Image (cartoon, rainbow, N blue to C red; front, side, top):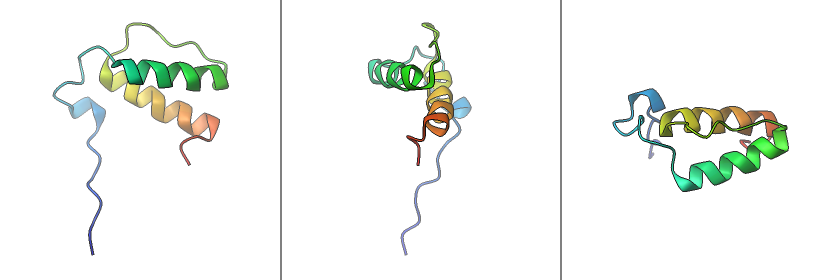
Length: 63
C-alpha cells in the first residue's frame, strides 16, 4: 500500500519567506472574492498557503 506524502507545514518551507507566487495570488483573489475577504498584497508563500487553506474551508472548495 502506498502512503501519501505527509504535507510539510508551510512554516517549515525553506522558501516560505519568499513573496507569494503568481498562481497563489490569483487563486487567493478568487477565494477571497467568494468569501467576501480582502487579500493583503505582501504575503509570503507560507502565509499565502495558510490563507488558501483557510479560505478553502470557508468557501467549501477544499473538500
